[in-house]
Length: 366
Ligand code: ZN
Image (cartoon, rainbow, N blue to C red; front, side, top):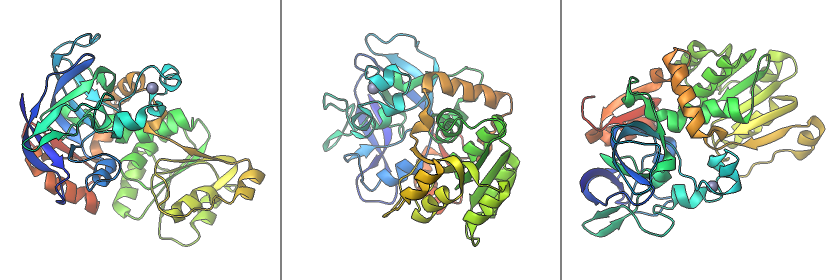
């Protein structure tokens, strides 16, 4: 079948729209007609070529309608509304324990650009095009997805808004709720308030955290963080941020949640912790980083990597959609919509940070 997709690997600033041939879904896969797809920093980082092979169709916050079922697919019907999350094998100990973001095969399944047997679902003029990015490659009008990648959504919810639940929102909200298990009376500093950080702020409010401190360089984002539930805000360029964060509770933060790759912010995340505190992070430091192990030991502190919010998409994403419906997780206030044909403008705005979460509309009614 002919589809339109945005291709990375030609050296341009943004993926380029091309017509490709897409094969039918194989056993255990479905064809999803995409309605919208969010753009995430992982797409920006992968576009010039990093972990995944090229040429490839990126995109991993897809939302769409099931159009065709491969052999053996169960639990889905043509016409179902779905959002797409990461791919996982379903058989390893992590998957069996309900922790599919730490699937033993997460790297080849999400970044391999192909199925485990080496085949891809896409073909262009010059031959095979890599597909299956995060099990979806959703910068396209249609995606071939393993059924484990798809999560059913209620049909009365606005599907075009829901894609970011599958990566950006779950990374922040799951990070706070599932990974760090922040609760009533706890304090947390959220370092960096992009889509992931702002989702973390909303989640910290949902679980009743006592102090929720947002730190960022953008006054506009700090204002939004306050509206989403931050009790305190600090600009990231202030002096002695560690001291100021510690002073807010008088003894430091129970949790920090770092969404940045800055070495200085990684240091700050540990410095701001109270005794027995935990520093969660979702991006690795961009250079050499010294966690000062004696301080970790003496303070009983933990440093905790978190992927995909530790969440099981099949159970957690429907919950997020339900909280949104109730008005308690207003993540849609972060979204900015673009027609698919303007993916270059959406990429430029995402790079420049002038929008928080760009979302491409495949059906062109932005
Ligand atoms: Zn697995």
